[in-house]
Length: 458
Ligand SMILES: Cc1ncc(COP(=O)(O)O)c(C=O)c1O
Image (cartoon, protein in one colour):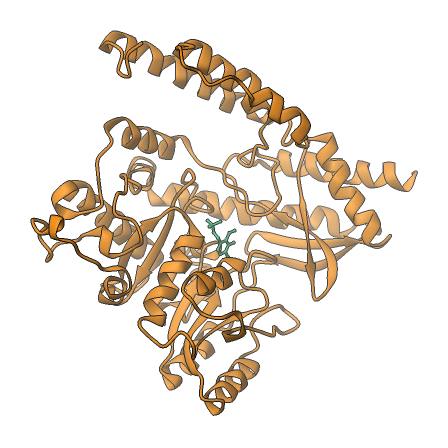
């Protein structure tokens, strides 16, 4: 069997793959959100002998769609409300498929100028759609973690790692601390600043920490603020943080991996006020812009800082023009595929207004879920809807809450996840999915209530 079959056979295989994927999507709502994974079952399911001889494309497609995908957790399911869902979209998937099938290289200008320019344009659309300042540009990454790494790398620059300090909040995504670690900043120089009662970074505590570090001879370098925390959707006091960073000459990185999409809504953009003063901003279009995994974006005010962090050279690269965009100088990788294509296809084919309308619908659906649950006397709201997340606890206590999350997973109808807020157990309900309907919300709330009835013996 050839790596590339003849063209007729290519079409047949491609059409079949698309038919199976579309059938899966068409059937999504009726599927289980999760089948709790059992390693002892999955290992033998996948442990086939090394396939030296061809199994054939049809048999391989069948195996994936009938034996493996049904065991996967469906984070794009309309009733997946755990963590931050990854809804993906068909328009984005076409872009991803086109990128894989045509396989352009986008690491250097010489190797892929047209696609590099397409990536630049995609970032420019993202900037314009979200109202960030003209001139901000950057790179499409595999996700928010890599965008946070790039923002911190640019911000820390060549500062002495034994003295540079990075500030985040106690609610920051852990990828920021991980990025600091990868960049050689000792854990003792990463400050998780306390948050206030609404889980926003406490600006007084931040100012005090910076002053104390300066007094200790350390080098405050970067403040990484949240524009929508993973836990509750809290947005840090960005104007005050931007003022402080300006006064202290610190790099301001804003992690808008989750919250950045609300800038698409003129009604909600003011919630992010202050972020336009950031030196770098993380987006994660594979969350709330409905792009397929893996699609994050980093925008920076001064791309020379990215080039300083990631630039490198070699004799065999001497033919590459340096005045144009060379993405290998904006991130850790040289070889990169047309990662922007899924976002370019999505934005261009569907239009930003449609994406914005879905973000608004997700906000409405989150509020609906909150409204339906908050009247239940067995439930206590821990944090009201912020962006599209609210959290709640069961009055019966933490064990009952844990049981609810586990029982829902066993049922497989809807999925929620839990966290701790100020040390206290809470259940998160997060809506990020253009497929989620008001009926999905109502049915899921009914399922939650029924589960509480069942465990409390009502
Ligand atoms: C606020 C925030 N930042 C960063 C990340 C990391 O992004 P990714 O999982 O795409 O690497 C997440 C992921 O959920 C997030 O919610």
